[in-house]
Length: 263
Image 1 (spheres, one colour):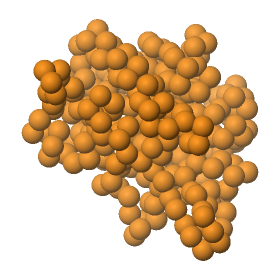
Image 2 (cartoon, rainbow, N blue to C red):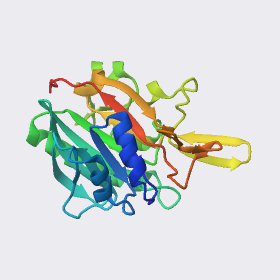
Image 3 (tube, rainbow, N blue to C red):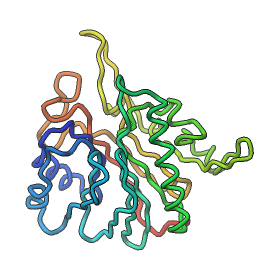
């Protein structure tokens, strides 16, 4: 799970969604008003809060105690973890990229390039590409920050990355990510997006700013993606938009099949 908490204290709702959705790993943005000791007290010994070394106040992580989690890289807007669960080894990066209107695509690309450089170095060190980047990208799946070769280089269709894992431009090789979000956006299932904007009383805009992208070894192991609209009996939508007294973002839920990865 990933959830931008909008600097609200949502300890009980966090504990509820983790229990209700049987979450293994939960990442959070804008979390400084949340007392995670309260969350772990509610959940009991099964979960622990992973403390970084102080380089990032944008991202935090809560995980089952049965999962080995280590902080490996930490910058102002992202944290990169290594995780091991049931024999699977993962690299998981949580990110909260600069938001409009104070920043634009170029500012986000600066952060993305640093993030990708750190991811590439850690992949080389860990000798696998079981990599997940999840977070509030403050950009949509088709935006340049997501698709540019020198940014996330995220393709939107499985066939592309399965056929060609990397692309070479001017002699430089760029490894691709796969962005599965378009496959799960659906009016039928009310999976519109995670963030709401309105330019008037009757105009509704949903943005998929909260996203997940993965490297090729994990493409076929994604089983479900959804934006959570209700936690137990508490609706996260007020009228037509996220209830800002809880958060202006909906939680992003991702199910990845367990089993040993092929790097």
